[in-house]
Image (cartoon, rainbow, N blue to C red):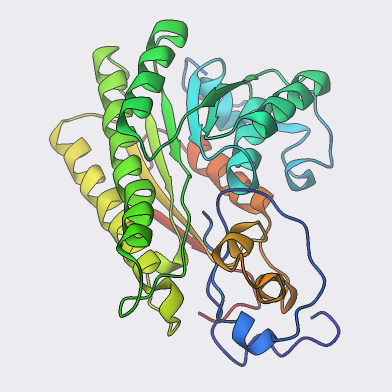
Length: 331
């Protein structure tokens, strides 16, 4: 536990962070109220070969992706090499870490966000590091369906289509149920629920038209999609994440009805140290900072490693939902 911090086991902690990465900030003055500050998570063609070693060497820095994936490629990831993955919200945080991890495993990764400067920098870093894959930045406002459809059209024409879709983009606004703004509710619903559903639909259609039967759709959800904490500022946000939980299971059922082997997975992190809380509490940076300073949080790389694990499982294994928290987090 960090000096001066309250016992993290004394009260519930909501989760942190999905969209962009962040650095640990100086301690805020109100850790008790900040403990309630949430953050969401919010960045090969043939199947495996018997007898092959569990890991093979690839270029990369040992310090990246938590030092656990930077120099190793999981054997189960070989079938994804040179295939195409879409990662939404790839300009920072979990999205950027996931994009980097996939490039390290040899995939062509389309990373999208409303602003692509950070993705372009990450693409240059990946190229300089000699990773076997490629990161392709794409500017897309996920609140605009036409831009999403245009992005999928571009991926189809330039890269054949999508084999993996990582629905990572998401955010929260402090709009409570009793006094929140309708515009804030709509903004969260449009990105957290509708954009995720549109990307899922278009990714499936891309797979179907190319007879891709082993694709994978992964939704970066949140522990807020599994329980409601007594923090009014995040109740509507939590509702959007409950929707993601239901949508992922519904997707799994529809994929079975369609008699495909495309898989659907939900990954639900607790507190992840990103910029999520700073956007939620943009008018109270000390409160936002304290969200990450009262315990040892998950890192974006932890979630990225979980994505790699899910993708590396054998094609007959369906991972439905992974719930992951910091060891010190209670709820």
